[in-house]
Image 1 (tube, rainbow, N blue to C red):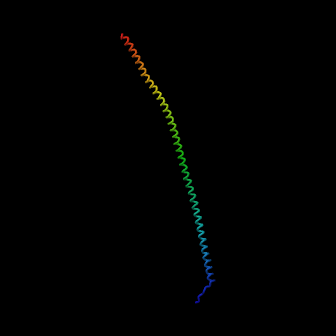
Image 2: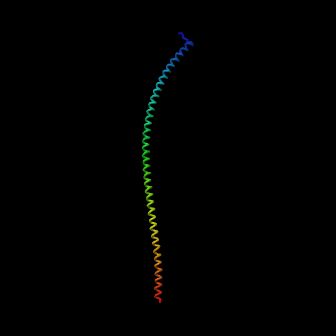
Image 3: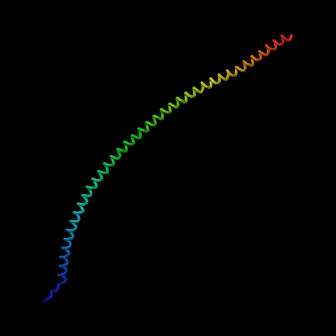
Length: 143
């Protein structure tokens, strides 16, 4: 058997053919990978869009609830302020009434003290008159 010796040119042709076949296989593999990646990208975009829509919807629901609670809080705050204003008005009224009653009481006490002060003065005056009368009576009987 005779061995066949391949020349440089033959080897180059074999390698060139091998490279072409490998390039074609790799090109086919790249195309399939690109298609799968593109399919994955499309599905991921759809999922992300769906997720984005759900997140936005949830945000709107939560923000609406929060706004409702803020409105309730503001209404409650207004109610508290109204009650405090009513209480403040009642306290003002009570304070004025207490001041009026205090002034009346002071006037009555002052009048009572002046009356009480007048009584001892009247008694002293009457006592002096009685002493004068006694002196006159004693002086009449002393004769």
